Image (tube, rainbow, N blue to C red; front, side, top):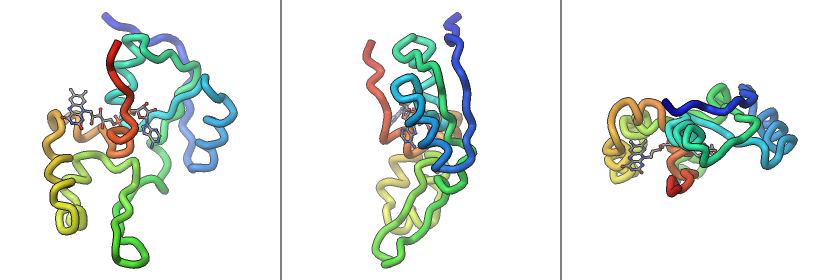
Length: 126
Ligand SMILES: Cc1cc2nc3c(=O)[nH]c(=O)nc-3n(C[C@H](O)[C@H](O)[C@H](O)COP(=O)(O)OP(=O)(O)OC[C@H]3O[C@@H](n4cnc5c(N)ncnc54)[C@H](O)[C@@H]3O)c2cc1C
């Protein structure tokens, strides 16, 4: 069985709190969204952060909305791949993105994995 190393787990509720934690702990900290990539990587000791900063409680990082100009979509980094895939605005304006998000892995991963985590994914090469 692969075990996680001991670490401190933080759950800030605002972007400002998260930034303060990440800045304060510097290279000893990593942000985590759904954890679908980071947790396995930690179990494989690819990363051993002393502090993990969960982003999951930050409401400001969720939501999909048309931008002020009506010319672009703002997609919160914490939107799950399942939600991006099903979102009516994404389906209408970026159907290719909706289709791609809906094809990643399987339902469990799409329900936990976020679009921000997908974009910020680390290489899993050992
Ligand atoms: C079995 C399997 C199959 C997969 N298949 C595909 C596929 O077919 N196509 C595809 O594109 N992807 C695929 N993936 C990757 C999947 O999309 C990612 O695991 C998922 O989107 C990561 O999101 P997360 O929220 O779980 O990220 P996490 O695991 O929480 O984080 C991933 C990385 O991004 C960083 N991070 C996360 N959120 C943020 C943020 N908001 N700001 C800054 N840094 C951040 C973390 O620190 C970490 O380094 C697959 C993964 C698995 C495990």
